[in-house]
Image 1 (cartoon, rainbow, N blue to C red):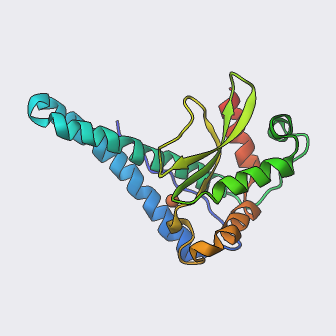
Image 2 (cartoon, rainbow, N blue to C red):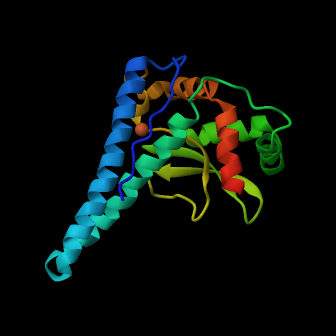
Length: 197
Ligand SMILES: [Fe+2]
């Protein structure tokens, strides 16, 4: 069973060029392709575990990177689908943000500061259903540091490829603000509902 590439209904994004978005979507497609490819290779190598033991170990390590790259981007682009829609005060997500972080501005300040972490990776908002709280976190590359068992609510790509045609790395803050200005919070609320199910 192969993973399917998701198609995103992306409007014009204020502050991010069409070209950058198009190139980025192509990179996402590459992660889907490689997720499937790695699964195929594992199945193939597993036919002879004695001869391929080393290769299997290495490619299993690779799997987390490719799978994370696929899934993270689905939240990233998924939150941009349909164009910007504000977060409503009465929404369960807004209430959960207030409960978890004090208020929306505190949450956003914390999330944005995490996004400025040196290196490549992701700023991620996740929901810990067991504790009934949201958490901000940093994920190195596509996969290192994902909090065990916690589904993603919002994912901000901090690889340079996310903004390289529009901004230099020293302008990361402008890119972060541009992303936030374009978020469709109705889509993010849906991710939160799924996370809280
Ligand atoms: Fe990316």
